[in-house]
Image (cartoon, rainbow, N blue to C red; front, side, top):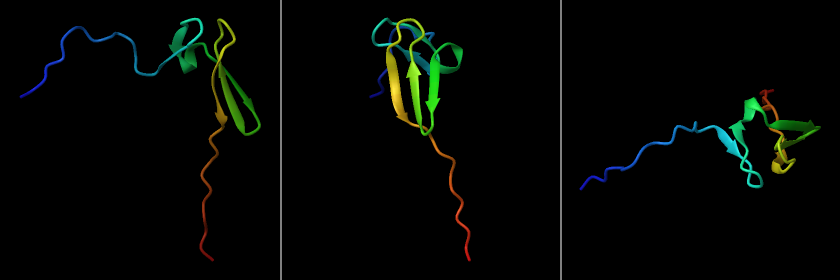
Length: 67
């Protein structure tokens, strides 16, 4: 038996971030404040200042050379 999804699909893009405090929504590159401090990254809502995410920044891969 195959299940068929009913209803309409959301017009929201998959890469949209949502603020849990004020319901602001936008792509990361279109409005969110991204603060990088050394090896940490914080994403802040531009509307209410809520910290949506805080984590170590991604570091570049380290290549390993054979001696």
